[in-house]
Length: 149
Image 1 (tube, rainbow, N blue to C red):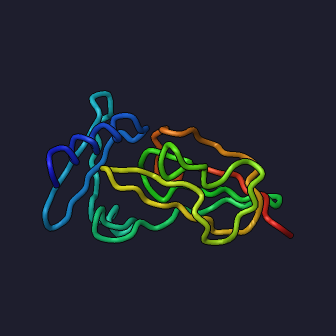
Image 2 (spheres, rainbow, N blue to C red):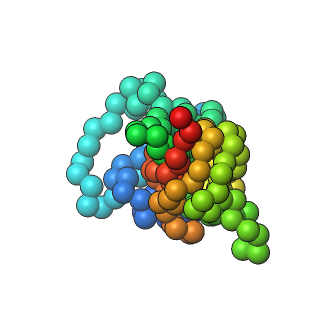
């Protein structure tokens, strides 16, 4: 991991609601704790068995919430939310857009890498729950979709 990537990761974590983060793989061991965070003891092996390793496997998607014909598309990672691929491009989706399963709905940027977020369902975007440039957390709802019966 390069210094500028580490610096960017720290900035993202500093603006998130995470208090403690520990990442460990063959090449790096990283422990991040905010100043006002309570001292905690982390059983990293237990945490690792519940989540994917950072940088070595694709992160598991958070469980989606489906209630009364509505579905939340949630963030699969921490990063900055962008509704379009570049400032001159049209947004991937808008309120009222009809989407298909596996359609790109936004991109999340982390450490200068842009990751597409795709829809798990078909339906109509009824609400966009975040704003361009906003730092997003893992599992945070991004879109509310009205799904067909």
